[in-house]
Image (tube, rainbow, N blue to C red; front, side, top):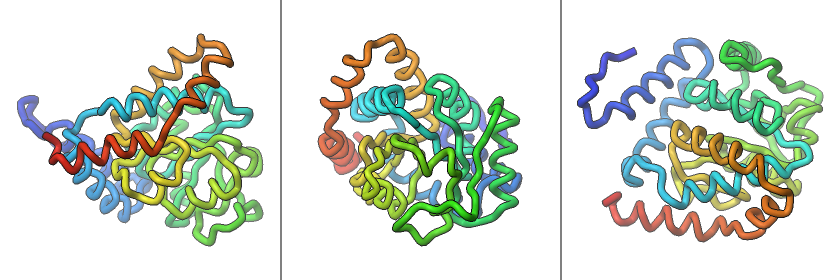
Length: 246
């Protein structure tokens, strides 16, 4: 990993970038993921590289959805696996939601690598797509899912989502919880709950929220879900970006 001085003002961003590069070198992340990450960095810069109140409230709502779900699933792509593997494993344990590999650029070898990487960080079981099981209304490789995972899921956490699958899942009646630094993206607008934040900050906040809400009643979590206004949160994040992050 790059030796970045503690005093460097961009240290966190540079170290995160190194994780993505290491993911590509390990065969976990697609080279295309480098482009997606760079695009996200630009939005993060405009957001002030900090978790805004819209993001922290979204983490509370997402945690409530995961804990209230009948069959929640955590969908993992190459970038998420490279950036927050241990956090995804911990969130899976807290919520009881299984981890399922789902990648856009199809590769059985990379699916196995992502699963092995999660297992190396403590996952006991990681679901992988099966060629004979597919979501309706989707043509990309991400349509292939596991029959005990995404096919049955009622609530799906999909950090770093692509818009077409998010829209397809919503048409199927699924609740989609996502992390997206662009509040104007198709994913952000289609999702049930959008955490407009960097995934390396969002996952610890989501874990903390899930731990807190685990002790609440079903009625309390239902009230949080009912009160969530995704459009309003996106509007706050957009306003922050348009202000130039100041």
